[in-house]
Amino acid sequence: MTSEPNITHDSFTLTREIAASPAQVFACWADPMLKRRWFVESDGPEWQTADYALDFRTGGTETGRFELSEGPGAGEHRQIAHFLDIADDHRIVYAYTMAINGRIHSASLATVTFASTGSNRTHLTFHEQMTVIGDSDGVKGRRHGWIHLLNALEHTLKEAA
Amino acid sequence: MMGTDTDTFHFSRNLPLPPDRLWHLMTDAKAREAWGAPGEHTLDVMEADTRVGGIDRHRCGPADAPEFEVETRWMRLDGPHDAVFTEMVEMGGMALGVSLVTYHLAAEGSGTALSVTVAVSSFVGPEMMADFKAGWSGGLDNLERVARA
Image 1: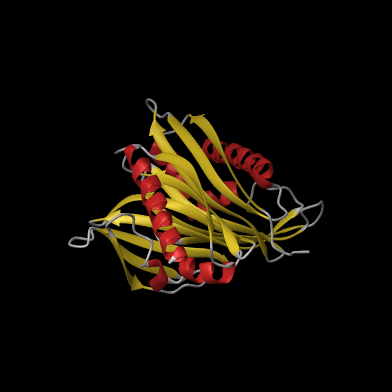
Image 2: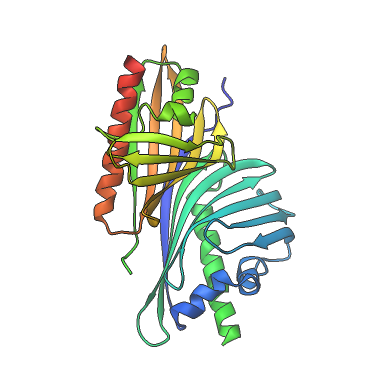
């Protein structure tokens, strides 16, 4: 009998064509108020935010603690991210861990790119490479979560226009 | 600006050391000097803070001009079973790429089945992928030699 967790690897890519300039889309990741709108405040009432902080710079961090009150993932979800490389309006690369009730269940490298595809048009690519550690909803759950978040990002941009 | 390219490499080795001894070789900043650089390159530790959230810094490259700086940021250390860290490679202050590296060690008889997964994001073109892959492959060949010595 062993308590060592199973470890697997996976990745996924999401793309969006967005009716805004790369600078406007990038600002949604860089500006703490805009980021909070789509990244923190877009979840349903079953999610409560215990704390959230964004220090957007190379070497900076993003941390959050979120409580889910119901369902199989109920408990405290904690995110710790480190920004590894930022090229304004072009690229954000960061690594992050997700933990539930104190147990890290994934470590990821996220690469986000912003490419102009015309006047006020941006092709956004979100690529996540994951190490999944022990029990986790894995790449399926993470992909589902990011589809929801990118929908919320587009909604935030429309509101700000 | 050059594009951003991503890829993932998997390596596996069966090594004649038990997991706890191999763990030391793979995570101790000074011990990594003995195997971490491929071929004739050298690896010199500049700073070491090997704990979750800590950062190790190495200089790497040809012995007469080690031009690469490597920053290791430890995300998970669950010895002697698994470790996850990021590795940022820079040259002359320019970031070339970053990797998410996962070690997985499993006891196998008196030795260890080691798997290493390297997820790369390259900032200087797709050609850099081959260099990342060759660097890790060469480093693990060195590790095998050190483990068998």
